[in-house]
Image 1 (cartoon, rainbow, N blue to C red):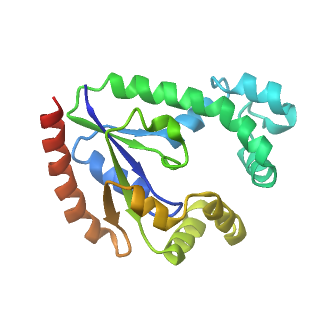
Image 2: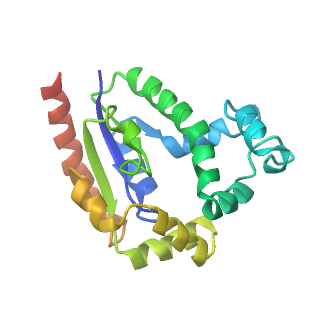
Length: 202
């Protein structure tokens, strides 16, 4: 069985960039955000339950989840957030397990934005890796990348675990306050380290 490393970090920290750089070492990357998008596309496994729970007004013209409308709801209504998570999280976890179990690579990287906020993945992972940068840089990057307004990005950041707690919980940390050239050496070192851990675990 492949060794399993969970990659996390706050919004705008650079998780996608780091995951892409790991993939260049032929490391399989399982992105739970991508799985969530698949589940909420037209015909996705979560769509009937979402329609039943929230109504047709949260489904767009194509039959997919209206993500903007749902985002507004869950940030203003904690109970709605819990209702949505109760639909999506078990499906995402099941898909994640399936993909990880089917891998024959020495190790796999699981990108899980809310890794520490959710206890569900603690039995799936063997090690955790946090991508870290300053909160000011997080905000700047997230606004530029996502197209969301600053107020919405700040609201997302407030719902995530504080930076200090992520760092305390992490087994490993990648520092991403500089440009991409600073990531390469860190990832190369960790890749070799994870290969050694995978070999020992087997």
